Amino acid sequence: MNLPRYRCHKVVQAVKIAQIYPDQRPTFKGRTCRGCFALNSACGNCERCDWETSHPGRPGATIVPEGPGVPSLRVEAAYLEKHKPVVGGYFVVYDDGYQSFSPAFAFEAGYERIIEV
Image (cartoon, rainbow, N blue to C red):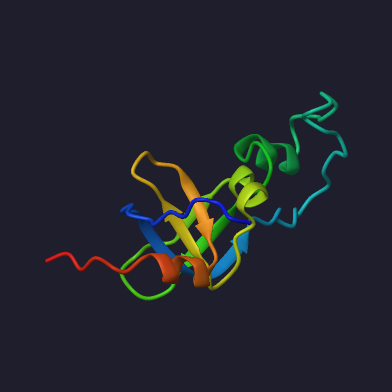
């Protein structure tokens, strides 16, 4: 194809991803109902119902950045489903707050680190 070419000039915030820890449903100690909040069949009184009430929606994940000085980041299920991040790539935040993912090769070919003094 012979399409117009573009060069990136954006300034973004980004970290290289060292680890991704998906949220895990805990192992419950006592008996739990087999109901479902989405179907209005949960009992609302068991340990599982308490956990689901405090953790609404689909499970997200914690992203651990490579290197020191940057805390772990929480991402929602929608981010995981849309961007499918992998270890070694970059978690990217644009000026307008939009969160994205970039494979390492593409990010490193298009961006260089700004050293703040």
